[in-house]
Length: 402
Image (tube, rainbow, N blue to C red; front, side):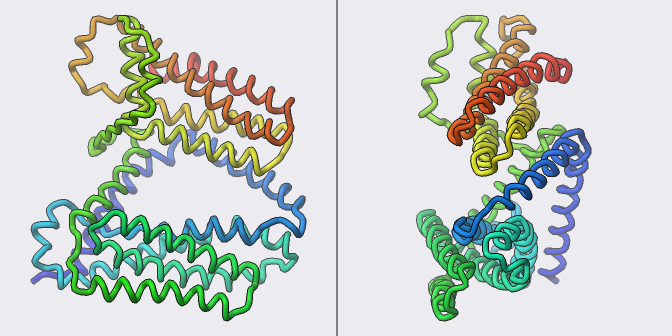
């Protein structure tokens, strides 16, 4: 006899083993030491920066924006696999307990992120408002309830086929969540907060009425689950080979001008290959952009003198280390062995590309420092970033590639 709860426990156990298996490689290297050092340094300077804040700092707007993102982005971990759209389709009506458990698990994972972000932002709130940390638990309770409502809304929205409906729902929830939290953190009149919160309940009721007779969109659920696992596999692939990782190629036509600027000659064969892979293959370009943006925001909003130079170097190191797997991206393609190019050319091309990418990142990370008027620190950060990029590429990565 079919047991939905047993199936869910088995799927959870399989996913936990898979994640635990690769997590040992992720959290068992020198990058962990760098991250601990980075977090420790960031915590120290963050504490010093908080002490400089005055009462006119827009803390309510900052907290509402950040926490609204955390609450609005509410993935539901269903652990469904491709064969389910055939074998579980007939049992859909008996899977209510299965998906309820998925929502509960997703809630506790989301609650962990809420505690993390709220814990980071509360020192700012305590400093600016002078109220201390007495509001931490009340805020946490309200945020937990808000997260649960968003999860239920997200689940009902997945019954729609149209991508536009899901994007519109995400935007609407982000705005409503943001307004609700802004009023909450500003300690507005309870009636106003309740009205905005009622909009979310009305949204949930509307989606429920419209979808209660709809069937599950199995292809969509499977696609979302595979996408989440591929994101984890891409992270794990930075530390060990992941056979289940599927290559994803994106056209990115708007960057064609970069590849077309390369010379068409035999010596540039691998330079073309690595550049095209960096732009189109996997998540290399996305990773570079994310780390550059995060580093730029930290450098712009947090001022800590010459310590900013260290942050620039750390972000370059994190980027360079996570771009090293680009070297082995095509290792299983035999046709590359047919290239009439000597092996040393491949290595030089990879190092050239990596050095240029990290140097550009050094330049971009120095811009936020310039925008704050710290020209000397910005210049030193740029020179130090390029120098570190050279040492990383031609000394550290040289040994790794060998």
